[in-house]
Length: 229
DNA sequence: AAAGCACAGTCTATTACGTCA
DNA sequence: GGTGACGTAATAGACTGTGCT
Image 1 (cartoon, rainbow, N blue to C red):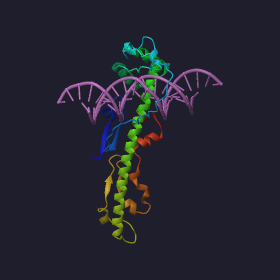
Image 2 (cartoon, rainbow, N blue to C red):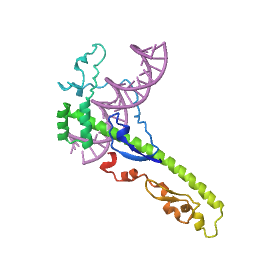
Image 3 (tube, rainbow, N blue to C red):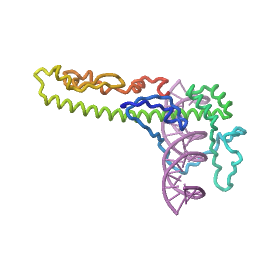
C-alpha cells in the first residue's frame, strides 16, 4: 500500500550494482541514471597504461585487432572488458569486503590475471558507484518523504481550521465526544500516532511526530560500515 | 617530507537502443 | 517487415588531482 519494500538486488540486477540495501519507501520507483559526463572533447591523454601488460589480456580482449592506422594520431588505448567470470569474482569479493588490503589485492589480481592496479581501480569505481546509487535512492526517498509530510501538514491544517470553527469552550481541552472526530493516524514505519489534538493542546508540540526523520537517515548520523552496504 | 591509499571528478571506449531512410 | 546507418544515452575501465594517514 503506502510503503513498498524495495530490493536493490532486483532493481539493479541487470547491471552489476548489486547493492544489498533494503529501503521501505512510499511509492518509490527508480530509473537510475548517471549524470552523463560532459563531452569536453580534445583531451589527449598520456598513453601509459594498464592495457599494455604483456600476456595478460588473453581472455579480456581480442589482441589481434590491435592494429592501428599509422597516420591517425596517437594510438588510442583499447578498452579492457572484463569477462563475466572476472566480473563475478570481483563482485563476490566486493560483497565480502569493499576494500582490499594489499595482500588481498595481489591475490585477487593473480587469480583474475589482472594487474593489482586494475583490481584497485575496479574497487574504487565500484565503491563510488555504489555510493552514487545509494545517494540517488536516498534523494528519491527524501523527495517522497517531503511530499508525504507536506500532504500530512495540509490535512492537519485543515483539521485545525475545522476544529477552531467549532468554537471550543474557555479551557481549550478536547472533550471526549470531540476526540472521535479527530483524525488519528498511525505511521506504519515508526508506529507513532499522530493526532490533530496535538495541535490544539497547549505545549503539544512535543508529540508532533510526523516530522520524524527516516530511519536510515537517523542511522547515518553516526557513520558506520552499514551505511553503504 | 614522502609514500600509499581512498575518493571525487572526469574522460572515453564500448554497448544498447531507438529512429529513420 | 527486415535491415543497415546513424545518433544518443548508459555503462564501465581508467586517469588526474586532492586530502588524509
